[in-house]
Structures are given as structure tokens and as C-alpha cells.
Image (tube, rainbow, N blue to C red; front, side, top):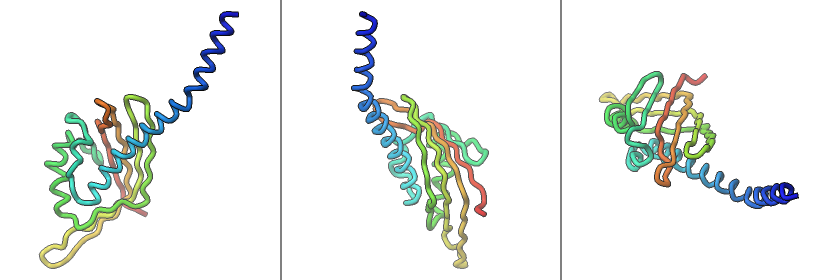
Length: 158
């Protein structure tokens, strides 16, 4: 009889608190999506301002088969200088999926990106349009979601 009462109490507690767990999961997922949106928006605005706080110091960046190092190294030696040559960087057909498994979160983004390069000395510009995918691993550290690993790759659009 005691086992039945205990089981009933435990089940009632689980049922009563399950919406709270669901709400927490939704809140965590929204926080993860906000981090990823902040990064995407910065790139579209051709800036890295505010992005360093989205990554851990020892983060790892992988791009199209290359190991780019930490996010700081990636910005200093790769993406940062590239942004200066872009007139436009735009994501379209953007979709993101996020799964949270505290203290980690896993995202997959798919998109088409269009880069319009600044005109050269002769006034010629070039447009690059590619289909891309990116996966990222985030970790909740001191109450904030941070990107610890990210990998992106692309191919020509059909």
C-alpha cells in the first residue's frame, strides 16, 4: 500500500511539474536561437562587433574542410579581413533547428548566402551565391549560452 501511495505521489508531482520543464526547455531553446541570430545578423551587417561574447575563448571554428582555430583567430586572420571586401552579405532561405540537452545545445542551420564584393578599380563587382549548412555546439556557462564549436560548409547553388 505504501508503494502505491508513493508511486501515486511521484506520478502526480511529475504531471504537475512537467509544464515547468517544458517551459524551461522552450526558454533555453529560445536563448540558443537568440545567440545564433545575433551572429547571423552581425555577419549580414558586415561587422564582428558584439560577436566575441557569443563564443568561448577556446572555441573551435571549422570551415569548408579547414581548421580555422579559435573564433578570435578566425576573425583576425580570415573572416574579419574578408568582411572589408564585401558590399553585401545576405542569408536567404534560412532555417535553423536547435536541440537542447543541458548544459549543451546543438544547432543545424541551412541557408543560401549571397556575397556581393566591393567594386574593383575598374568598377567591376562580383556576386557569389552558395548553398550552405552550419552546425554548432553551444554550452551554457555561467548562465549564458556560448558557441564552443562551429562548422560550416557550402557548395554552388543549382
